[in-house]
Image (cartoon, rainbow, N blue to C red; front, top):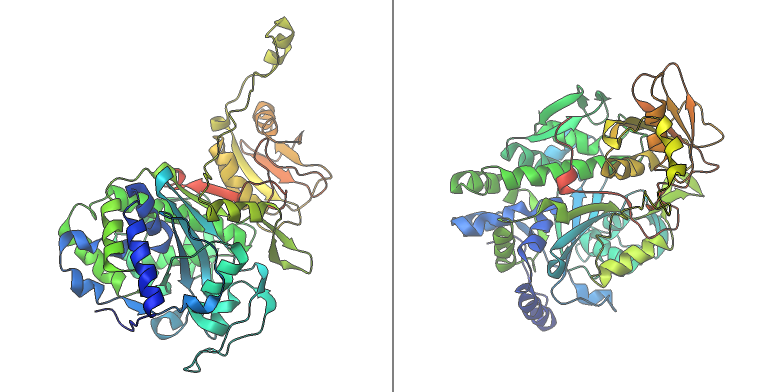
Length: 493
């Protein structure tokens, strides 16, 4: 049986009953979303037997949610799972550097909305500066506790363990958390190896000594060690920010889910058991994540529409007190959290822009035909962030991808122009105009040094984002920063 299991008392037992009743309403697409980010894929073992052997491998912790005091209301039928990518460095994890204590390297709220057949994975950047609640010291002396203070969101776990991190996330977001799942570095590595690696498109060569990652550009299958380096890599890609890294993590997790769903893992008892054997030895959950819940997830994995699994990042901007830290943008962040807490539809529409919105299609429109029409799919764009908002280029990249543009890279510019500018090489003016036409405001300018790829440089003075998309993380709009679906994860170049 699972290790370290314990009861929370009569009140917790009643909560389990209520949760069990609510669980019967969950749709297949909803349950499967947990697996996307939390790597809770291990729970699929029910369908094939050898059940208790594998379930007994899982470490579980008892979380005293009664100690939280007043908690956010729970929406019947919906499910919220706090997913922790732990950076603990004990044991084999010590091969990936030294660090005291344990804290989330990645922190995600997996929101499953069964009635709508969708799921949203909300990344909470670890560099976020927030007002943390006080946490008591643990009885075993492992965690010293802390007074209420302002600090990085992932520091709560260092002072009070998972229980403190859980309480902090609930109080900061107003979202009722039902369960948690945690996986460490070596656990993630083993999970990727167990599915035979993950196919990805690497747009540019990567050389990141800190993450122990060297990759050539192009399509390739990442093994566990490479996948871990890709997920951890921060300074060898993009602009070196936490939000930039989150964008790549979302791409990888989407590709990983698609591979699990489309491969042989779910169809073969043998491959499923081998896969789950490696997974169950590496994850930690709360003791309320029961066998029955895991069985429901197993069934749900059979039929999932990848376009209904969304990855987003809480809207954010640079912390005025420290450019290396982030603060959540208001009111956009609160609007996102409130929508999740109330199980509102987050999918939104494409806006479907009325490109022909000019009234009357008279002959006055004919002069526009002087320039050849270039479709977004024929435009390759390199995005450069010249603003003070850390990670903005990687937030904008998926928004342009959704519109059909081919994003070849992101980073910071050598020179920041006075206005947001789309630079283009010889013969690429129409391509630049197509991109500029999707932006709230941008000028175009020829740069003879450029080839067929146009370059978007966002200026701090006037960047206002894409038309209808809210643009930057601190724009004040309601749209989450960045965001892709599992179906959009780029596995082909």
